[in-house]
Structures are given as structure tokens and as C-alpha cells.
Length: 288
Image (tube, rainbow, N blue to C red; front, side):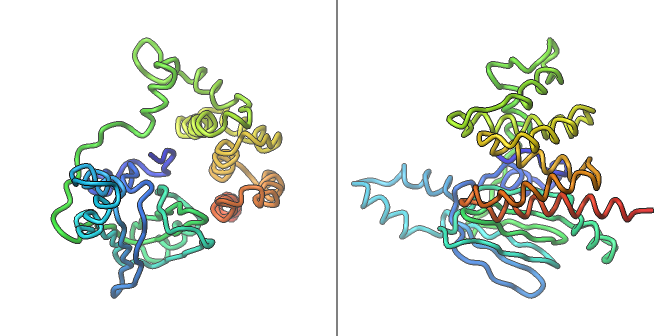
């Protein structure tokens, strides 16, 4: 699941279950179109497709054909209600959804000030890019049948709580700042970064959310050292600077922007993440 959302989990059960927990991870987007003031994204759930495939009989090809004949059973629509901003920036990759984040950005603050109403800013990581929407609400429905959102199975930081059999926890089962800091600060070797760096990046965001005074210096250190294995740590560090940093951090962010081409699979998302950070810093400097 995605970690490090900028907002608490929404009370809407469908949003919480399907978007906040990344139910649609590795699902294919088949259509995007405006519908009045709304934007509608059609997506084929990889989770539901797999469950249907397991129920089918025959060879692999026969089961695939049976699934395609019943595609409406695993097809959903995500409806971005009263969508005031939509941006789609992707390279020529398959239209596969990886995950999403609810963000607090300078763009969101500006729109809410102009409209006088709360909005969601939801950014979706796609293979080779991203799609984002700023809207008043989000609705989720199935093409055939009813959605069945379940209660959340785990909290946003659950995998940190389970990390290495709970080695980050204190005697009361709560995350220990010192242990989480050690995870966030470690220099990950390139061969390990697929999972260990993901956890390190999440640990850094946890420190920020818990208002640890160590989050900002550590984020600056990570961006300064630029180790190849720090894939997610670099991403998280930019978000920390956007939230806690100042104008003196902008050159460091611009340097990271210049290296985004190293991450060709999703350099577009990384560039947008850094621009978010710069825009948030600049917006804070303009505040009286």
C-alpha cells in the first residue's frame, strides 16, 4: 500500500478501502473521460481478476478467455466529482496503476482558497508517469454489481510495526523514534533497495508526521549524499523539505531535479514531486 499520505484516512469507507490502501495496485486503466463536471476513470481490478481466474476451469488460455468474457465483473469506475483540475503526464508505457497518494500541495491550497471549499488532491502513480486530480469528492462503483468496501485491515504504518518481527516497537507495541530513525538513516546498498529502501523512505515520512526534529536534517543529508540505493529515500526527502524546509533548500532540490533522468521508469513523477516541494516552500515564504 501507499504510505505517507498527507491527510488522515478519509471517513468514506470506499475511499479508504480502495484508494487509501491501494486496492487497485497493478490494475489496468482502460478509459478516462469527462462526464459533465466530473472525470471518470475506468479500471480493471487486478485483485478481482485474479479471484475470478481462480474460479475458472481449463487451461491457462481457456481461463483467461473466460475472464475476458466476464470483464465487467472486475471493472470499476473511479469518479472524481466536480473535478477542477486534471493532469495526465505519462510516457508510452502500459496504462497500469501502481498506487496513489492524497496530498497537501500548494496547488490544493490555492484552489481551496479560491473556491472556499475543501477538496481532495489525489495523485496516481502510473507506469511511466502519473495522473492527478483535484476534486470535491470521489465516488467508486462497479460496472456490474455493488462495491463491498471492508473495514481497513491495517494502519498506514502497519508494515513498519511488523518490520523485522517488530524490532521497531517498544514494550507497549508503539513505534520507537530511535529505531525508526536508524531505519530511515541507513545507507541502502543498490542491490537491496527494492524493499529495504521502500521501508527507509516510509520511516523518514513517519518521522516527519511525528514532528521529530531529526526529520529535516536527515532529509537534507539524504539529498546531499545521493546514493543510488536511496531511490525512495530521495523521494521522501524531497517531500520532507517541501513540508519543513525553507528557501535555502531549493538549490538542493533543483540539483535532485537535474538527476531525475536516472529514474527513467518514472522520472516524470519524481520531477513533479520535487516541484511540489519547491512550490510549497515558495508559498510559505509569501505568507505574512
